[in-house]
Length: 110
Length: 118
Image (cartoon, rainbow over all chains, first blue to last red; front, top):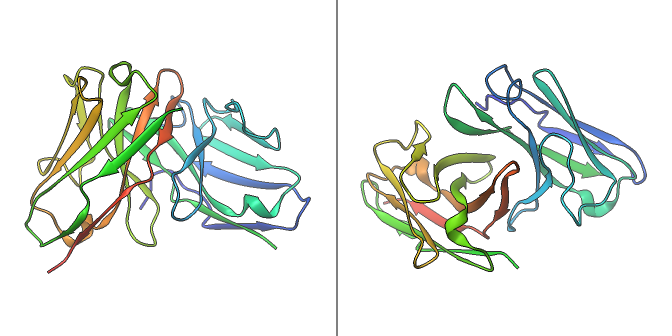
């Protein structure tokens, strides 16, 4: 069981806005930055958002991240079919001395 | 362009050993902390281990501590994961990943499949 909690699934139609949540605790999200990754089966995961809300170069501005307290969120606006993938949040945990990943959210574009 | 290429995966019997390698190119390998992350079939990403730039500091997930050893050879731009006392639950695709200061894990390899089965 992941210490970072994400909904197992999310869905939306093309053009819609979808939000994926990530809930943690004071020892991880509450005190460290959150990253978000996109993962297509059979490929290498890619960094989508770093340091809570920073988009690496090349990531469309349709993707945005935020953090408040011990929770974080990934928002995808103007949903496109190619956004269908698994999304993971991650943060360092000071108590476990380990990187924690959320359980992953499978996004379906209807 | 940063490239991380894993190798060494395969089929191994329970209780056996295997060593994964991750060759880095397009990057000054010795400047970065590195990680191993795995994904069991049908499951999510799970962090396994990390190592600092000179190999002097390492950390492990509880599930592998005492059985797996992470190491690096900066002269060969290569990261390693020595796995021993393997169990069926270690079956997964193993990814190596780069860690950038103030960013965290930013680049991943394509992964290497390890199957533990008799």
